[in-house]
Amino acid sequence: QKEVEQNSGPLSVPEGAIASLNCTYSDRGSQSFFWYRQYSGKSPELIMFIYSNGDKEDGRFTAQLNKASQYVSLLIRDSQPSDSATYLCAVNVWGSQGNLIFGKGTKLSVKP
Amino acid sequence: SQTIHQWPATLVQPVGSPLSLECTVEGTSNPNLYWYRQAAGRGLQLLFYSVGIGQISSEVPQNLSASRPQDRQFILSSKKLLLSDSGFYLCAWSVSGDSYNEQFFGPGTRLTVL
Image (cartoon, rainbow over all chains, first blue to last red; front, side, top):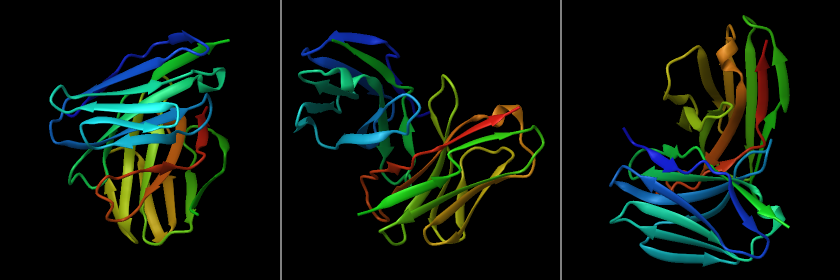
């Protein structure tokens, strides 16, 4: 069974620090990887996706992928209180016709 | 730009009553469409997806059904709601043929079954 694992948290970091969110996946056929941010009571918002090994940067966000270790992470630099949310990791398996497998999410709290 | 709408935003229904949730997408043609449910303390569960009008694939057998009567309209239904149907229902879309499968979510419908 395809699984995506995340530490549920809460992960608490001070304002201005780097927040590191981690995700592991079980299916070696996984091809693309997504990070969604979900504020309490709201729907998930796509913030980044990555499909090649290495790093991908977008503003304060950096996604890191290591397919050999089946590991994907999200770094948030200069964390702000507005970054406080649950972060969902999702994985797409090639040819699965759109079936993203989601982790249960890591709750991040950024303290002022 | 593309926009996805869902309604109603919130719904309180008694056990045994019917359900109809609607999702529409603007600004794109022939999208892939998805229904997910997010129950309290649980992850996102894919319920149905559709790659075209009248084409529905079910991921989880249960008392829910889905239909796609128009290209950009996706409906989730039930004839008789159960307590366990409570949750946050999310519609999502992706570009047809996008092999990376970026999915974008609507605002969701929060359903409480009493």
